[in-house]
Length: 204
Image 1 (cartoon, rainbow, N blue to C red):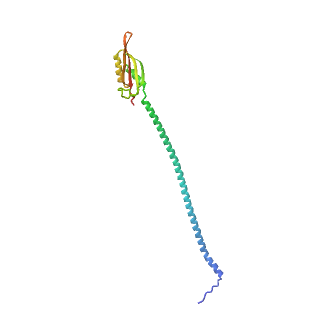
Image 2 (cartoon, helix red, strand yellow):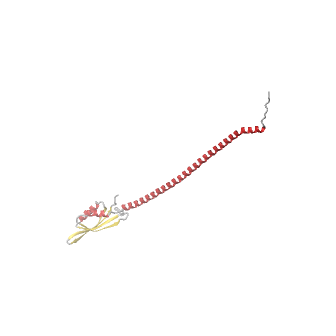
Image 3 (cartoon, rainbow, N blue to C red):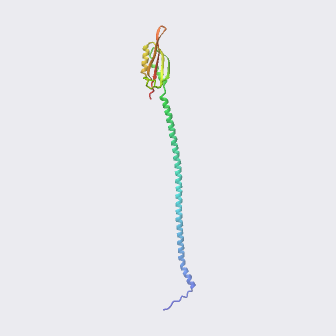
């Protein structure tokens, strides 16, 4: 059996081995670079995603602040409207209380003209305030307004007719004949009289 003798110099052998290892090294370097690139793009994508999340969070925060400002404005408007409504209610209550105690004299005077029978002449008509507790009976609490009639009649029967008409009127109550006094004028008898009445409360 013949031995093989290596006649290739050692230098050439080393170069040959180095040449065989070079593709492997290049392949490893390529894989390394590719790995670094993948890691870079992955991290970049993550950072971009986080930045987008931060931007969305900032936008949501700004939207909430804007909504809060709008809600605050709406609440202020509602409070202002409620305050105005309360003021209007108070004014209406004042007006209602004034109207409840108001005496419609034009209507009352027009009614009196239909109540006066023939043969009676009114000389004066005056009003006065009725104190509390002045009702009939005395324990009744009245208040309000009273009216006094002073006039002249041709007879007591005419005065009685006038009293009856006042008692049945929708305006008056507690009719009282204070006095009736006879006097003679030009050969005829006349009767001076005074009546007091209380005004009924106006119905709502």
